Image (cartoon, rainbow, N blue to C red; front, side, top):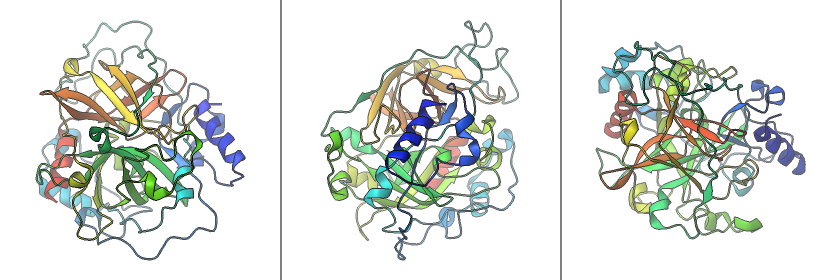
Length: 414
């Protein structure tokens, strides 16, 4: 049994809860110890908890009421078509696949703290030797051009994550937790405040993983998606302490009012099946609202944001990953970081840009956490945690190409 899932099972037994791990149809109990995991985590809240009936301001067209649950059949563009999409194309597609605004007051301390990860499909064996085909540089501009080695390098060596020191230095306040509800269960991921090109200095945008906001093929967005920036930055919940939730959330709870995922994720990801090529586009951008009506933007509130670096040359990257892992030996309360260094490649579809892959011991709950590299002397976001292997100690995230760039352009202008 995967240690990632075993941690969830043991913790749920200790707390005498009846909830199962995220998407029980993944048959997590039968997975091998080499199971790949979508590094989200589940939180089984009290059975008698009910959402508070009032909510945040109405969503934008990218996130108008009516999201969640099954989605209408979507036309799935090819990658070549998608890279030529204009704002109007993204807007038309987004109107078919919308997110419900988060309900104010839904998240309480009990729901938020019991975060455990699900298991996922078994990983393919790593190559036994350094490939001799296409080098680990920029992906080919033509999606149909497939590297001779399938886009895979040997898996990187394990790197142990280290907790960010308390209290967080100001630059770490852009990191936080993303909470959401799906199928009557509560889940948790990680996320990052990113810069908004159309609203410099006043961003309300958060970058996370696609599976942290959207169910995938034949489904729709999750519900009650909420971002808690700088979660536990002052160690309120560290070391077994039981501080007030207000102290653990220095900037409050920022409910989602809009979201976007790639058409590849929405149209191809199998909610109950094995990983496929959709994992190459496992990213999402959410727009959040200040819990205080008329308050400052998210960026102004936390004191900064991180720009996104699209089509970053692989050989120029030295990656540090961030996230809130919740499976043993972690408890979900600490922001952990891995100095992953230069990434190698991993591919589930050789026609798409290989995922960035680094060594990191982070586990479930770190999904969606930001991957930073230095550009022009400052940190920039180059990926997010998508999948990982708890035994092998590595994680992988999407290579952010033109598709991701166009998605941010749409959310920024919308």
